[in-house]
Amino acid sequence: MGIAQEDDAYAVTADLYDYIEPYRTRADVQFFVDAATTSGGPVLEVGCGTGRILIPTARAGIDIVGIDLSPHMLRVCRNHLVKEPEAVQRRVQLKQADMRNLRLDRKFKLITLPFRPFQHLTSVEDQLSCLHGIRKHLGENGRLILDLFNPSLELLVADNLGKEFGDEPEFTCPDGRRVVRLQKIVAREYSTQINQIELIYLVTHADGRKERLVHAFPMRYFFRFEVEHLLVRCGFTVEVLYGDYDKSPFGPEHPAELIFVATKA
Image (cartoon, rainbow, N blue to C red; front, side, top):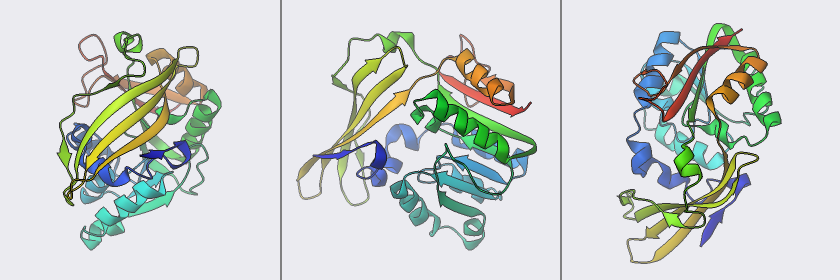
């Protein structure tokens, strides 16, 4: 069994990421591409991963810098990028960097955190450091888009602690590996709003060999007004809060996502 810990979280699973059904079919790509084209660029994507959003943004004609802490995810992104036309490659800069300590010596019209990388910051100190760094890198009239999930109170108290669960379909990699992904909540700490999560990959290789890979990490969940206070504390004004990537307003009809669009106060 391979286990990836927090300091090397994607070491054993980075090459599987792009084939996971919920990631491959997420409805957020066009939302972020549209926001990038409206801004005119340049764009900074924090937690760019394998380039799922970064590369379509560059294809749309926008200069974009992608940062990620994981060298493994950036390696996959570079492998995707070299298959793109030269004009697309020229629009992209990739950098291994920590979102808590941004030092890029340039300003951006738009800074995005798609698909919840902010929720890997488990302390208020780290959250403030990230947001202050983002504000320093925003140009005049620049915008921040912060993408989080809205906690489900029902799931927070569900009787599934320590149990493996999941209903994602099996996926197949180009090399013939068949993979089923499950998840497990190892621990819940309500006082800090942190869940210890394991994503479990049951891999069947083309030769029939079976392997179990585990990606373990802490995940911090946030509530709406907590995030608004964090943003205001770091010098932002919330412009709009969406509940879905079709720009539906957050509320009872669209309660799953917290998509904050904010500007410098």
